[in-house]
Length: 238
Image (cartoon, rainbow, N blue to C red):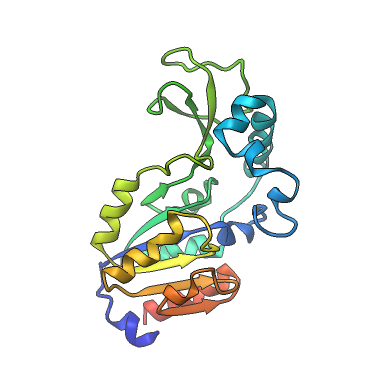
């Protein structure tokens, strides 16, 4: 990997895709582990528009619990802070599948939450009516702009991820793709590595174990996210 990273000029844009693996080391449950969140919930019940309209109380409660857990002292870990440290030498653009705010807590300056954010709520009638939200959310809360029902600002299965045009623009501007702590199973995020391969740009995987699309990566470090990010940053800054 040393030869690859020596070819990345200082101040280059680096596209970082982060997933559940980096948040897990801060104590946040993942969805796909054997003891993860999906183990106790059907995806279609708590992470789909149909589930919300069928039983909004269940969905509100699910995300209210996640929000309380996040805001009860969950802190960014060394992996998050190491990415912030890279900003001294490179333009780090983080595109995260995570709905927590740990990249923000660490101090990263460029973050896109493609799957939404736990600490925000939005109107069901107008996707542009988005509000910071740190308390429990339920059906008594109405949109401050138009009075419609509110929902978690989360991208559910069957919905289009957020800011995809901006994400593609950043990919075109970037010299390197780095995937951290993601399974390679959820699209379109899992397809980003193919996009970089098509542009003939180098790709790096930092993950506990090989992802589903491991054959698309030029280089990989398979360790817990914090250790993998630390090793990667040391190589990049040499």
